[in-house]
Image 1 (tube, rainbow, N blue to C red):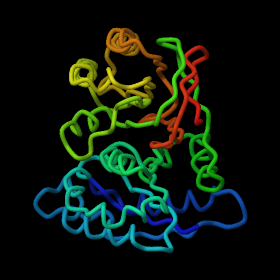
Image 2: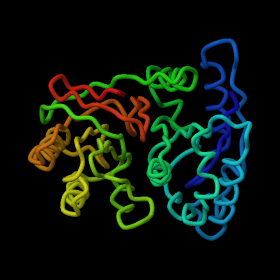
Image 3: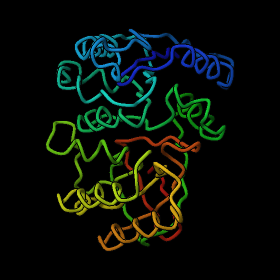
Length: 293
């Protein structure tokens, strides 16, 4: 297995990425340790906008070159932050759409924009740990990532029942903030009859409220078949924060007339189990499961 490492958004710490590669190589099961190589600039800041890595033009060009390579099986991203949306419009996805199905893409957070585009083209994207988060991701989630890369097997994920019922649909979604900003762009998911996964990090509860309300009022969440939420890591430890967040999820999602489960172990917390966006999943809202179908 050949794994390429690509930086899509904010600059990472090259030393930390190197450590993560060593951790992956040490823990990977089986006799054959994957070959992991850096592709393009890692940890290089944009000269003018230092919250970005490299330049948009360079990232778009490198991404196209990377996807075109025949000997790279897996593309795992370094980190999120911000920046993926800036260069996606420069990529000619139609030119190498057939190559996308031959790659396994691994990431979450800001790569939600790229994931939605790839899923819209009929392919899949693994929502799972990136290299910058690997060492703070729990061992069960890391092992589930390795198992998927090795065998294609996906875990069943359990959460809390908010609205009972069952449904099937293509899994879409990811980071709530990114999903809201994707609306009206070529990177907006296809909401109709899907199962929508939502998570976020570093937000106040009222902002999560505003974003969920946005998705409801624009018709996005009204059109999905079901909803599963992962971790919402709050910006600050608010008094009764978890209780208030649960009340918010109930207030916004319980009256949409579709199955909803919350708190599945995926997102920005230490538990970040892999989810295959673009694959058909089933919500078992009677028992609280999100199941690959």
